[in-house]
Image 1: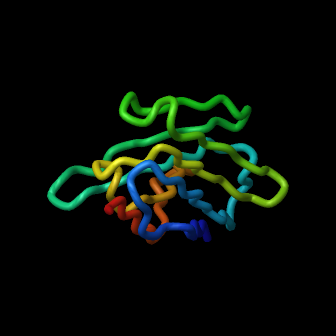
Image 2: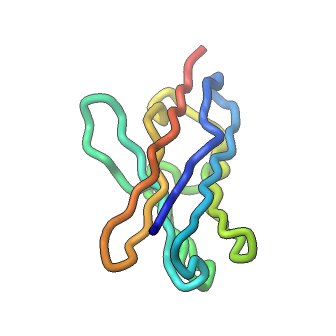
Length: 114
């Protein structure tokens, strides 16, 4: 079965950096696009970044130039490098893929605060 397990969240000061990781299993990882979403309290879940099977990436306007999504098709991992973090980046971050159905990880909390 498809499993997505995120890690790497935490508390960071404004301007700081974090690297989120997502370990995928249960499907042919290299064939599928992967995405990071986030959900802040009281807000809808929004897509942050996506990366295709060919490593083409795209980003939400709010994070472009600050975040970078990458993938390792040997290790079945997808990463989100987050630099220049702002308080408005505070949210639970989820790894996602679509493989006949929508699959989500359990989420990892990112808090940006001084």
